[in-house]
Length: 260
Image 1 (cartoon, rainbow, N blue to C red):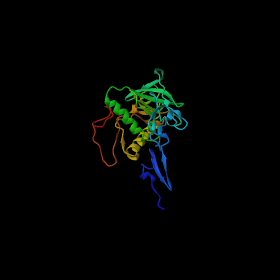
Image 2 (cartoon, rainbow, N blue to C red; image 1 turned 135 degrees about the vertical axis):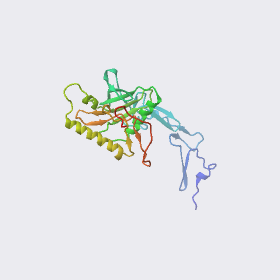
Image 3 (spheres, rainbow, N blue to C red; image 1 turned 60 degrees about the horizontal axis):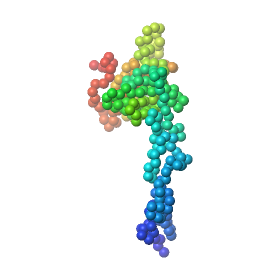
Image 4 (cartoon, rainbow, N blue to C red; image 1 turned 120 degrees about the horizontal axis):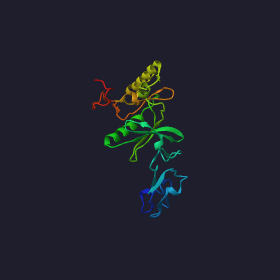
């Protein structure tokens, strides 16, 4: 005897959900995110995931949507709220001010028990917003010991923020122009120059797409407690797509550091 596909005859074998033919019968289930009896009209009702946090974990703000749910971190926090670690708050105060970045004010903060640097934008024009977002796009693709590490970002609030590893020993500019005993030996200076060149070589030749910093200067070179170099401030940087041999842009950089 031939098997009947009951799903082809809804008038005889009603199913108001997902119908699946089986040998000698059929299976009728409510759609994903619903529960009840799919064989009856209006027999399936939406599951309110907020009432079942053990099955549908959300450490942020959970909003029920028919058939699913939306989970997001509260304002002022970031990370994936569906992750076990949950949303993390980047706490800053005026007392922890540590300096100024190319497009914002840099604070010292605590993130997930780690001391970090938080660059809060001082945005007044769309260009600076674009530079902030560009820096996130660039740094999220880079993993090099001589490039400052981006830990996270918050781009969903009026004041944008970037969170970096804290490099607490100042900039190369500070060390070179310090009024007092020389802070860096000539061996250190030579090594730092080599580390900067190595970072640039990586960006130009070894990254997934060639990246050009376009604003290398001593104030954008950070020095950690071990005198290891960290290239920073990628707001003006640009990708060069692999299928292109060049990219034409406006002149970019800082007067005094530009080639003629």
